[in-house]
Length: 330
Image (cartoon, rainbow, N blue to C red; front, top):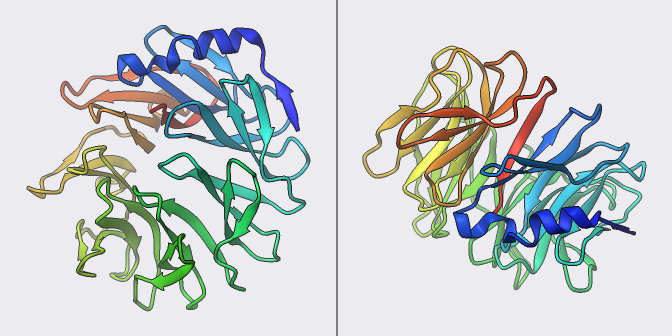
């Protein structure tokens, strides 16, 4: 299924090369300002905003390709949850999953050749891999229990994901070259939300093994697992800085959900939002100098950008509707 994009969208976003020469000033995000979930793309510096989906379905979960030339997202526009890709260069939107079962959670491989996604087309949730050249999906997990949350390793050779095949949600690792699957977290409770470090050596994840949600880091070379947060509250949603030196995560240790940053070398922990509001969906800028996030500090969900050097926080959406899930272009 192909749908042409208006020419002004191509001119607005392809010709300036999505702002990459300026260090990544483009954000995609989801907004309800049109009455349903739509995906918008914003040029922060030039204050330019475009609704790139503009349909009656629910569009969400934007995910940029590594070169910034494509944007994958999930949509219900066909009556079923499918994965679509905006191709900026050829000015079109393509349905790439096309199944009668729900498909969602699309993740680009770092080399841009593959999309991993979750699908229930085999009767239960499995991880599928889609070659973007021939668009033939492969069931990579092929097991009767629930598998989800696929995350590519930086070298595009492995996928960490979460499976219930052992009873509890645990983390597994798939070698995409040989199809080998290995369980890499072991405990009797719940491990979830894996995140690779930029050098591919470490996996951060969330665990309930201590009775609450804590951030653990697994050294994939030694199999050592370390609790990095040690809190009586809940810590979750880890996301590495682009240089791998810091780990941002969400925590309610101060009574409300805020964004914290952990220095991986010094172990210094900083509450970088320091607000009485709820804040979530942190996203590092490509150069690691800023964090985009969602906050209800203005009484509705807006997207803010935090400058880590100065501590300045700017509301970049300023709309009465709910805006959420920001993702930076590369």
